[in-house]
Amino acid sequence: MALLLRTFARQGVCISRPHCSVLYRHAAPMGTTAKEEMNKFWSKNAKLNRPMSPHITIYKWSIPMMMSITHRGTGVGLSGAISAFALAALVLPGNYPDYLDMIHSLSMGPYLIGLAKFGIAFPVSYHTLNGIRHLWWDLGKGFRIPEVYRTGYTVIGLSIIASIALASL
Image (tube, rainbow, N blue to C red; front, side, top):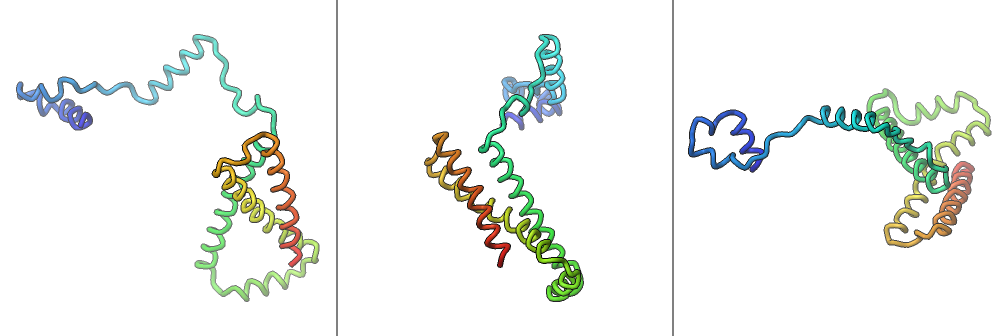
């Protein structure tokens, strides 16, 4: 309602009619723009000689912090990879067996193929197991610091074991 009244007041719709002044008399005028507010913020901080926030450089890196960043990264990476493969399946000519034959014709050694399989399996297993850990946290359990570290190391270990198992198939 306030936005509507401000709009009418700015356009002068009610100004020509004295009886309309009751409608917009209490409407607050528009403040400053975001850019003006940002400039005011930075000039105030410069005037008071305040340092710029150090961001993540002041924090000591920990396992939960690295796992959180990795969880987000694997989520973005998996989403991008699935989207790219789906788009490729729609756009590229041929079908799956043709591309599988092309990969077999490259005659890569078993170690390189195993490494590629591990590279695909690790983000999937890590993101899945760490997602289960987050669901456990959603239940309100496992928030004590020793439990956070223990479950973190457990997720890392199980992810490596699961990735090796999947890569060996």
